Each structure stands twice: as structure tokens, then as C-alpha cells.
Amino acid sequence: MELLEKITGEIKKAMLAKDKVRLEALRGIKKELLEAKTAKGAAGDLSDETATSILQKMVKQRKDSATIYSEQNRPDLAEAEIEQMKVIQEYLPAQLTPEQLEGALKALIAEVGATSMKEMGKVMGLATKQLAGKAEGRAVSEMVKKLLS
Image 1 (cartoon, rainbow, N blue to C red):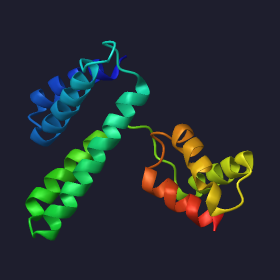
Image 2: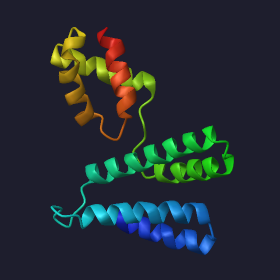
Image 3: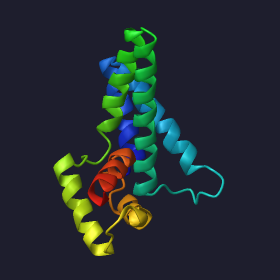
């Protein structure tokens, strides 16, 4: 089942359950996916990679907003953002643990043959393609720096 169809079905369930936070998060997902699907240059089709990157972006936005609200002493708004973030994360692939990420990156570094920080670009290029949706870019970057230094 396509993600957009699944989200539409989940919206109906959330409406029936009167779950406002879940409903708002799901409507946000549907909006972003529809915009990407109908954007100029899109072939009217949405790949899994594109959908995953959209969802990751949405999670990051919610996380950043929650941080800002917390800093401004608005825990009510921060909590709403965190709840929406949790709903969005349900539709993302499982994230790698730090140990799994380190193992995957060690294998990539060996594959590329990188030995110093000068070759970080090669490793990051390959890592972002292979680990897309499975690990946050910042975590990948930090781990690569740690392993190459």
C-alpha cells in the first residue's frame, strides 16, 4: 500500500477517535506528500526515498520547534510538537542504534579505503546514500569524524 493511501486511512481513524494531535500530524504529512507529488518536475509519482526524506525533514522541524518553545518557556507548545514528531516517526524506517551506525560506517570506511579526515567527503557521500532514512545526517557526520580522527 502506498504511503499516501495509508496516511489517508489513518486520518479517517484519527477523526473517528477524535485524536486531535494525531490528526494534525497526519494532515501535515499528507499535505507535504501531496505537494511533493504534484510539484513541478515531479512525474506525479512519489518514490519511497523522497517520502522518507520528507518525513525526516518534518521530524527535524518538529524537534527544532520543540527546542525553541522549551527555551522560550512554552512547554505546552513544545509538548504538542513532540507528540506530532512521535506520530511522524511511526512512518519512518527504524533508526540505527549508535552501535549499528558505527559498524556500518566502519564497513563503509574500509570499502572506500579512507584513512584520514581529508577523505571524509568520500565516506559521507556513500554513507548518506546507503543510510538514508536509517540515521540522522548529523549523527552520521559526527561518527565519521570520530572514526577518521
